Image 1: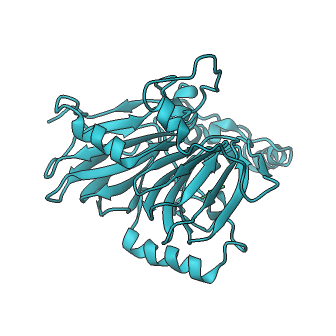
Image 2: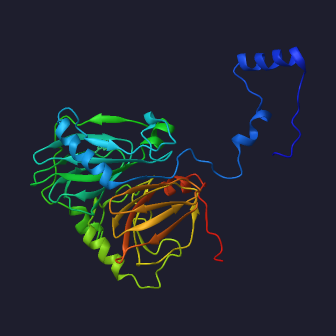
Image 3: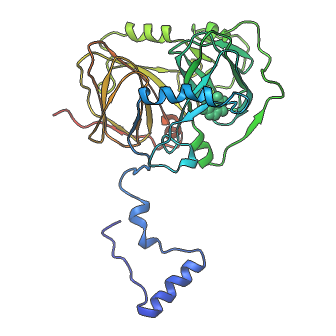
Length: 354
Ligand code: GTQ
């Protein structure tokens, strides 16, 4: 549009009067702003950013000393992107990330909300989350979904604290005014006797005959780390993504699609010393280092990461991975790609190798 002549309208006092009058009546001349409204490619407000685990970990553990679970039923430090208003609780324009800690004996009471959530467990074995009537026991590296409007409560009857990453679509839901929230009348929801039952059925390529479930999200609540990592290790070397290395998506077995309607999630492995091809996507992404170490380069900025560091790749930012340790680099990530696909707004590309 920049080649279009910009009409100037009336001049002098007359012109000022015209533009004041337009403004007073809640109008604005499009021709003054159209280039900003329609840039040639996405210009997201989120910035590339990294939270270092060695900095956030002590503060997360201190949170458990300074505030009780009764005062803070969700004891979470949110990871806020410096490019976005603090009140949006946003790591990217659509995605939220937070770190939650629950001490032995504590209960995060049952509630439900329209935002979709998934958790990646970082520390602690034996805590549990109840989701939609099923109890699932948590261990490090497990990925647990809490789909839209499902009741969920967390509890820790293990010996030590449990710490996990919360991934939600809160900024997206608020942007479209889709927020609904409700407390459950008791601390815990009733659960069936068999824990991890969804994983035992749907996680093995089986489904109960005659059951009609929503296919908007995965019926599997817990994707255990040992299983996902073994699958990653077992991938043939031919299954190599030029920009991500060996990478698996956590999928909804009923559809083959993403685990949540608005968020998809991945575990990837990059061999030591490997530098991968740059890539950009119209979706935004949050990465978390899990094992090894590496450098994520985002629009020319290098972020050296270690396990449990959290990193933001803004929409349409060019990023590339490098594994810098002596052991494989393993990363967990989630993106808003399903949202962008649903709106026919997903694109990606990669520059030709030199
Ligand atoms: O555990 O239910 O980080 O509702 C933000 C909102 C966690 C939760 C968050 C939530 C939760």
